[in-house]
Length: 266
Image 1 (spheres, rainbow, N blue to C red):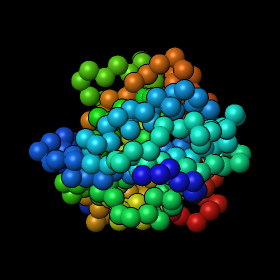
Image 2 (image 1 turned 180 degrees about the vertical axis):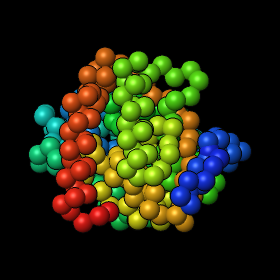
Image 3 (image 1 turned 45 degrees about the horizontal axis):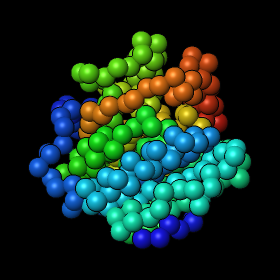
């Protein structure tokens, strides 16, 4: 395949939240997986993430990565990306300037919906925090009948730094108030979608507030089956430096408030 350049269980407000792992008897090789991946100044981390996906593509039945370079400096070089294989493909595009992760995910969403239908669509960070195994579990849950999966990093064995853990729990409470959806995790970039759910979500927050926007949109779609799937997130000094801090959280709050008061509702 050639690389082409294009742009658990309880009920809450009618939404079923599953906290159990997907049925691992589902054969991953019978699936096709689309990865929606924004990238901004990731350098070698992006290369390693893509290589890990390519190495697992045959096991997962085939992977197409919809990669959006969101104004990296230097730009991601198409020629430097991992080569395609019979089970692995990259559809690549670039934003001329940095527009934000939400904007890059929306570009990737639109690209993926132009292609053939996939078993599952998974959003995944490009910096190495998210592993292939997590993407596999999300995809299996979608294949088993879920419409939306939220990755849950608060599982036994997770090594989440204390400061990040406290910030994430505060964000979870905020999202519960704003969206009415009670989740175990908040702002986890590992999410899975069926095609009908991906069609029903349009991301209008350019930057990090898009995560709450997605959760709110899901909470307003009572016919969708929504699952939480345990995933692991790997932290390093580099990824922690890029993550959200208190100031970033305040920025998200201001962005959300201005959006819901001065723009059309989602």
